Length: 195
Image (cartoon, rainbow, N blue to C red):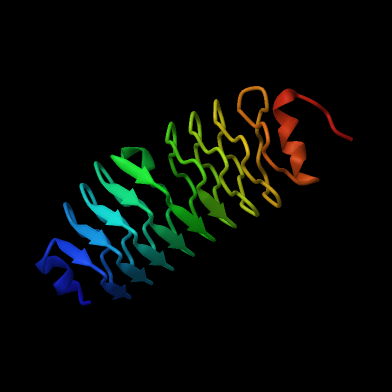
């Protein structure tokens, strides 16, 4: 689909979009259902009040998109840049999946994201405070300077994950899976010295 065709209508179903440049454009109040976006640039786009249902984003740049009062359901992001997104501004955020994505500086505070896949993703300086991430898949992800405070991480999988510091007293970690030597990040918040 071409750039002009995207703006001709506000409802899109089962469309495939490749190499579109929507950077700094406004797609307010659009509906995308079962659509595929490949190598599209949506950096700094205004997607307020827009709905994405069962969509796929592949190798797209969605950094700093505006998602006020938007909805994302059953949508997959693969090898995408999603830097600086305020996910907390969504009205509905259900069953997203992130595979090998860059999610630096993202805000997930207080969100209910049980069983979410964040596989092999870069989550540096992301804020997960007070979020419910029970049974989520964080395998092989990088958590440099990410924040966890009153976060439910029970039954989550952190095997192969790097650079996390999680206080097991201030967060729920029962049944979560960790691997050595990275699991030392569980002791850092307790002031324990490991030689």
